[in-house]
Image (tube, rainbow, N blue to C red):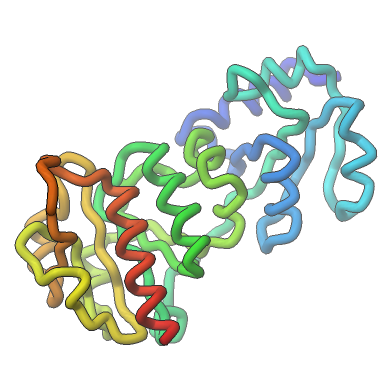
Amino acid sequence: MLSKSQISLLTSLQHKKFRRENGLFLVEGYKSIIEFAGSPYRIQTIYHTPGIAPKLLNLSRKINFQEISLNELQKISALKNPADAIAAVNIPEWAGFSDKDLKNKFTLVLDGVQDPGNMGTIIRTADWFGITNLVCSEDTVDVYNPKVVQATMGSLARMNINYTDLKEFLRSAKLPVYGALLNGKSIYKTNFGTEGLVVMGNEGNGIRPEIEALINNAVTIPRIGGAESLNVAIATAIFCSEVAGKSSK
């Protein structure tokens, strides 16, 4: 049975302030929890209903397990229809990326992406294409937001993520910097090589001028139809496909 203090703590983790204060975030659903159990992330406690207990037997004994009722699960879940288990997971302390971490691979750089659904889709897409480094501006949506975590479907467990001052990061970068812009070279004619930083901008405003000034390879996805713009998650998927395809040749 959950105590009032446990319920208060777990429900507070739906808010960034309390996730940071407690160093915890929530992962919902057995399939996603399994992804984190097999990753460098450290699961503190798994709260689960009786029916799923047999599935959890093979997980590390270093994890705390607490059996709760469906009613209790509903109280701490951020979902309208809660899954069978919820895990409280420690937020790792990322030290940032060294030159070695960025070498011979592509890294996504997000400038002010705000929508949790977009962020979750970006992470899941990057994971699909084998891109595991993600650098975010400090005002980009928190990757540990429950909606983001849910949308990643476990892919978050395989990502290396750092929030930082993008201007300082890009200024010190020793790699080509590609940016998704409207006035760039066609993505289908761009030679991405085998490494670099790919900058994607905010949903409504794109890449900020001060960040755009640090991009040395402007790239655009050619518009064929009449749509005014392209969703940032979809645009990122196209970029991921292109850079992954070219770097694997």
